[in-house]
Length: 433
Ligand code: SF4
Ligand code: SF4
Image (cartoon, rainbow, N blue to C red):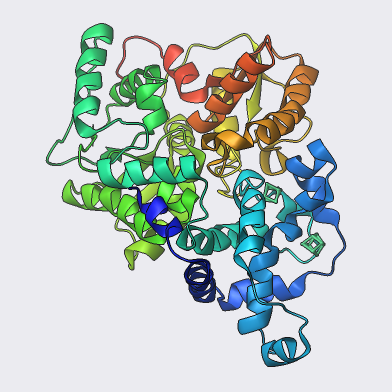
């Protein structure tokens, strides 16, 4: 029986109590300020791809945290005793939580676009992430997302890219492409992490990575005890698993004395380590965390990348967790500038970019497929409007969403990788000065 099934086996009261206890842990001052600040203006709805693609008011961002808000008003708000006395905040029920599962998981990619337009700056994405803790505790994480998260906790990888599989893949790629991947080097300046999606679905990313690092003359390694950058503990709402997954990478980096950890083309992996890593570790991280696009931009700035120009028009899809929530939207544009492409920006781009619809673990939730694909149409229209020859991004999860949309809608466009694009334009001889 899985962890989630065991949580579901309990009686309803126990599940609600578990949710309420987890919610209570998350009623921080910051969360309270955000929850008390809403002026019910509704602006956030027009920023959310799920509301815009359906027109259904239940997908209004602030509505998605209703049980969390209700629990706060009943238990932790300054006027909670009055709310209980006059019945303005009803007890949270299991039925209510079950009904809200769709809104908290399927219908929020935690992209943060709603916060951009909110006059009060309410961070809905952060509140959803907190609300997921209570939902997980009540056994209300969607079964498939919970299963993926548990696999990652128990076997390192959400997609079966265990250390053994990683070693086999590396050996195969070294043979096939003539690259060298230093696994488990005892000392290295740079620890490189990977996304299981890359290992299993886009192995050319690993080839590209090795070529770029070799070209730059970097001292680097991949650790078989801390290579997985994705964090399904965070996405599913299991705080302990989130910590375990981050700690594997942090320990591996400390063990090899790395001064930099490179997060791969994965959006939420960047946020998990760059913005939450020190919190879960309980101390400042003794290394710098760079998304691969930031690392590439740093190489460009330092003159360590020698690139053949690319005479193509291209558009760039900003992964929400790297650009809007991560603050790193300038990096890919610096890299694309160095490639000399004709950059045709999407109608909404950089901090304002629309989510692909598959972030926040949504792409792993089967029953969310219809909702996700509806939201994806926004992205399709925007990309078509640019008329660009190529489209690239810097998140393997986004690429997966695009692949799904391409197949489902029989779309004649595809989404590529910024890293692979750069690796394909490296000038020989390989080593730069
Ligand atoms: S964070 Fe993104 S998906 Fe979630 S409610 Fe806001 S705009 Fe919608
Ligand atoms: S935009 Fe902000 S203040 Fe307005 S309804 Fe949405 S969350 Fe509330």
